[in-house]
Length: 259
Image 1: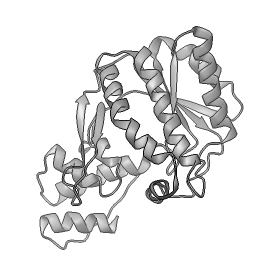
Image 2 (image 1 turned 45 degrees about the horizontal axis):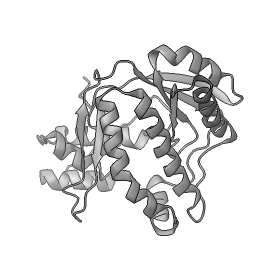
Image 3 (image 1 turned 180 degrees about the vertical axis):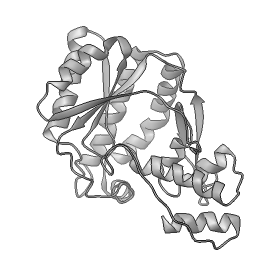
Image 4 (image 1 turned 60 degrees about the vertical axis):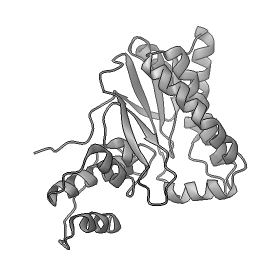
């Protein structure tokens, strides 16, 4: 956080000290983007406190230096993080694809797993390890551009039948890289894996993609589904041993000042 604020101070050409108070209303360091939301908020608060008027792109670019995913959290709705190639990071930032109201029927059912451990390995350290040691990493890199294009198209068309299999394909690719890293990165618990299996069963039984699972570097699992299917999906998954509670969330606004 101090290194991040040093970067902001350099932008404003000041040496002011700061007191930072940060609070979130969901578990920290458990794969629910606490660092992403935290650094997006810090980027906005610190630059405004110093009178800097940054564009959304500049704010996204800055937030990335605290947490890569924070570049997305600056915006609301559906957001794409643009991969950069320059060493100075000028071409690495996020952009808004669609606003929060683009797809009202799409929801994220977060399955909170009981006893989910706090991450033993920081995400930044884990990423360095996968680049260096996972044999699946290069394959993943080659597949990503095409998969992202298809995901972007499915979101634009509000097409769950196309989107849900792509979400799970992406999640499985991410997990394969983690599990083939040395030492192996395994963020899931027995309950987490049971949730993934139950989603596959639900989709098979209905003969169509009713839901899609994904997870970050943590044990909690995100289930994308449509509003009409929430009751049956929630009922099935909530019965699994180890599921503590469920949160129903929707695309929200981006970072904003709260007085």
